[in-house]
Image (cartoon, rainbow, N blue to C red; front, side, top):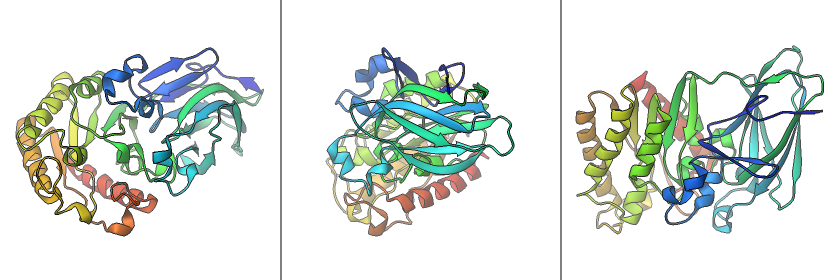
Length: 344
């Protein structure tokens, strides 16, 4: 088999930066050399977990081999998973058809994954290898059949950036392509860049600047839930912070449309007060009033999807926050319908 070079035979789609080691390359979802700026409380590893990143190429090969290093995520994340392959697997897509997930081995030694793709037609077709949701991944080498062709496909014409927390990163989904973010894709011509992060989303200006630099046609923002749980903002500061965040993006990218949504919540939190002194039900009211005010400023470029209410305890994992795998798909379908109705 013959080896391919990143940037010539394949690319990392959805990566913000690439970290290069002596014999490996790792995709990051923030500028890796400034990771502490985006994760001041720690959890830097989340940005190196390539949720929403795919290795993509145009090729007629029947087989692909990947040499890689995969680092297991922290135990507290493993404890929430229904099975470990949810966190440490790739999804394989050939010519738009998902072949399914393939497990990786999270160890400290180099491993090889061999994929049998077949190719009855014999021609070039797009191949996508969607990388793990909750494991750091370093690619050492990628090989195709000796007589195969391989090239970098053209990107989709419109960029979609998603900003959210651990649920948006995919906690609870059973594979990279079945997370609610991927399931909410409302059109096919979108290049996704996910800046979803663990430990929540607090409308930090550095993320607004990063998103503006990515120049998205669409921005979806799953915000409000972690603010309620942590008290990082309150009813007096939420509006100014959301308005400032959205304004930074739209001022820099005039044709960007923003869709604001609030993550689903377990009914058990409805009447429970958070650190900010409001119950979850009261916080939803604050959130909706805030988004309405931002929409008035946004001049038809800001849209609102109301919090998903079709939930009960069976839809959640043990902590009552993260969706189970079946709920990811249902929630994604709900969002796709709602977003399509707003932005077309």
